[in-house]
Length: 422
Ligand code: GLY
Image (tube, rainbow, N blue to C red; front, top):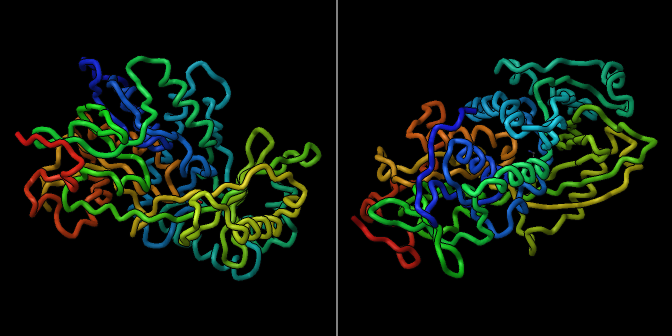
């Protein structure tokens, strides 16, 4: 990460940067903006309780590669490259993996039956074509590394580049570091609307009244982004909830260590992962549901059954663990599974609206992509644009170019937005 360059000289009540959303992405962006010397307000009435609370924290560009997502792979690899420095930057004065649970232990991909073996071998072909290291192991070699793996698994592959972090620790650590400095303010309120002034975004209106004024506002509140009032007219943020059930379990002393590596399995075509933490717990995840539960935090009984059944098939000792927690949250999905990241053009070809950056839609990859989202936002704050990430512009799904028919700076909901055009 770059070193601080900007010295903040903003009046009281006015911030250089307002970040809407206190998940891993919002915190990562706030941290990087703060490190650049800017004053930062992070707005969230329940920080860290959304998708970040559920996330297993796999940093897995290789095993998360999906067919026809090569551009996303480039972003994931850049994030992977940034992770060691990002974690080190949080580790000042600590010896325990920066207090974030960041670990560079490898991942093993394993299959349950012959069809899973074929599917993982086919995927390996795609991974290798993208220059990624995925090495086959015999079942015996895999069990030499992880003795508790079932002898019945059909195949195993070593993926050394896929690592992990503990998202809850990551959030706590960034929050702790930021809270030390008066240049940072946590605003425990819900953002209601973007505020506009002189044709640019000037800050954030808060639910129940009040506002945060900022030179730059970064919308990083996941699924909540699409419901924010005052987004530019014509901007379509096509976010949809993709629910995941995930379990946390304690490993009895007699079974420790249950695993050293993260295990990603395919069981009759269904993915499951088992992520061992240093504290003797494991995380087992995660389903993907696009249903509409009555309560967004409701855990699916079928999902829990599926996770335990499939994890136990790969690792029979799972049946002997103590269930600590079952959690469900929604990931913010997009039509192409890629984030909505960048500035918004006033028309199909720009110029961009000033004072506004969007950073949402990270779907399955929010934790992995945190450092690169932070770096991209930092560049945009500095007035730079990296052409490699042009394909992730947040206006790419907007059929009508933002602002094209309603006047250049008309926000989507003028009723709830103060706007004083220059
Ligand atoms: N990143 C893994 C998941 O979303 O389940």
